[in-house]
Length: 171
Image (cartoon, rainbow, N blue to C red; front, side):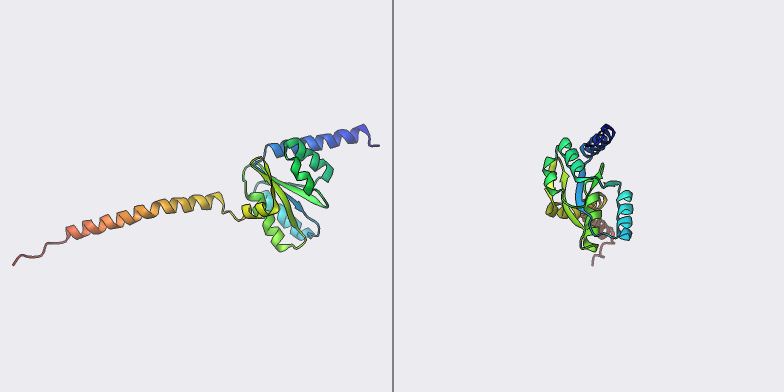
């Protein structure tokens, strides 16, 4: 039977992880079995740069934390060597980085995730990863707004240039 100290440490891990999940905008659960140290180091660096917290915790503790945070449905995916990537600000960052790793490492698999208070499956996580970044979407939107305005400006300039030409001489 575990000692009281060990049980308190585990309870703290569950409480901290549950709080982090509750305060995040999205998260992705992966099976990291078979990833090399080199790939794992590169993945962790990319996740850190994207502002994503990646943590490996025992499945039972992760399950309890997910349940405490309101994502009890994620417990069904907690089999094998799992880790969770949690993003406090960017909804698509964990999905993008982990999908890139899953494309390079055959044994690395995206299992599930959560977004907007709901558990999502691996297919939805992959679809989420295909969404362009917020900056790209804003740039495309602004470009689509500016395009008609540029067309109007060019047309008005052409009319002004035409009217400014010298009138043909009357015979």
